[in-house]
View (cartoon, rainbow, N blue to C red):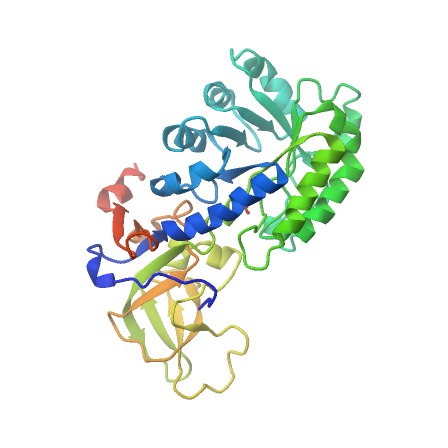
Length: 405
Ligand SMILES: *Cc1c(COP(=O)(O)O)cnc(C)c1O
């Protein structure tokens, strides 16, 4: 359990929804938002919410007042922002490629459209410029520098499809950026301002010559600004120095940093399977594959409140009074395992287990694989009403059926 945060003490009995459910604590979101507000005021930049990471619109009202707008990665996300993120907020869109139909709709909604290639920009230039309203146009660049170790999350590998490399811009000649208002790069993932500093260094080294031709630059996402230990002052310094030196507006579009440590996934123990040759296995009414896919994709082992992850030395002799379990999911995928944990008590059928840090990349990535029940979406406000729940959405058979034919 993360000792730093004062988590609300949930009164499960008061909540009349079956498990599994996500609980998003509005007070914890506001805590993150205050940090992001300070960064914007101090550094003089605009921060957006990348909807890809979190688009649970039932709690957008806690985020929208503190940020400049959203970064959408599709027409659907842009429409969601238009409908639920509130008046006067900027809608930025970036996608690796657009279709003509999508672009025609986007030009009615978006304030900023970022293109992934010069070809895409040339294809849609007439549509964008004929939209009858000023749309800021951006071009994603590929600085060919990323400190992301995992290939699946690294946008700068030699096989990358993201952004124009310096060579591509040079090949396009002097007027390469004609009609383009800003540059965009996104090369980070859950990283600190030290990584940003080195990345910005490389971006400047390679693309500085183009800065006088544009008005703004978007530093992308992957900034873990609200995480404990993140060096916020260095971030502000990097942004201020950049603005002063080049006179460009700076935009950032992180996603998960808005909501880290704000959400919980509550589930029920359905069975405890004794394993005389190894570790007993618990089956929950939730699933890593369906309800927290990054557990398998990253992969990582989430915290469970009141338990300890047993990640370092799985075979160490068990401490006195501790009970070891493998926590598994209710799907038929063999690898759908959440992790191995130590509990201070034996687990039994009916126990509630609460998984921590479950707001980002969960609700927006869920599937109904195996026909498994989608978790309900609940919010509470531990600052105002002591954790009283509001059930935003419960899912049923119709949600399963309607997507399939
Ligand atoms: C994923 C993504 C983001 C958000 O990243 P986080 O890791 O959630 O901060 C922002 N911009 C682009 C282009 C992305 O692909």
